[in-house]
Image 1: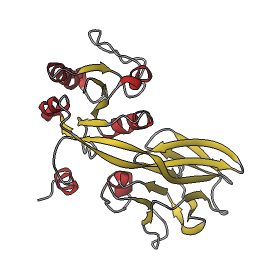
Image 2: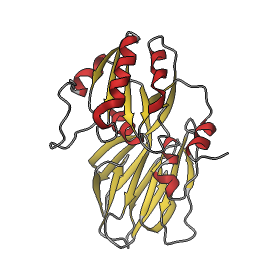
Image 3: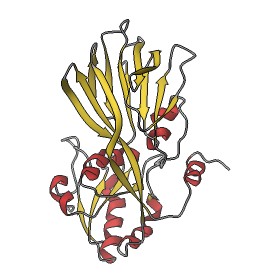
Image 4: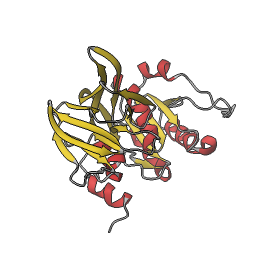
Length: 287
């Protein structure tokens, strides 16, 4: 391991103290590092003058790994670009839950093992998301966690029709619906009442959000299914689709969101030999 991108969330890693410590550990282990921001920051935010930041698109082609410093959101921001370049991601948690992170900010000493190649990789399925109007493609993206189709800020319910392979699966009125990967099962989907699914499973989760119909329940579908979400004929004029918590795209009457398993998979770096259930117990402080 020679070239590693360090991607700190400046709003989480105050004064970049965690990434500075990581840089020192990795350099002593013989690893070259480059600093890149995982997303655009406010123009008013002043970066420290003693740190040099590179452009992510310039550094990714030569990188062997990306280390994210923040919460799961920071990893999600980085996942699309890194996955498209087939580069694995290691997460250092400075957030709250941090289900995808491998290390806590107090465990930076574990980074020294990277230089010797002492790590494994977990493959995580992703979703391919398209919004189509007749034959026109209006939107396309991939996601690691989930796709949320919601009512937006309006204080009214939205009526949605969810189909699996063209067959109606859920028709509900409520705040919306979440279509998630197993990785995303512990995120928004869990808050909406969805199940916890092992991250290496191959399923697509469909979870209504605050459904007005008490019969609406979460569905665990095969990853071979093609999920479509559209506004019901008696629905409000629009809904809003968001991928991995990003910017919303307006879904109008007649538009269809098509969601299926992507041919791309994110790869997360693992340094510890621990079960997913160890992570669940630790994060929820069970036992």
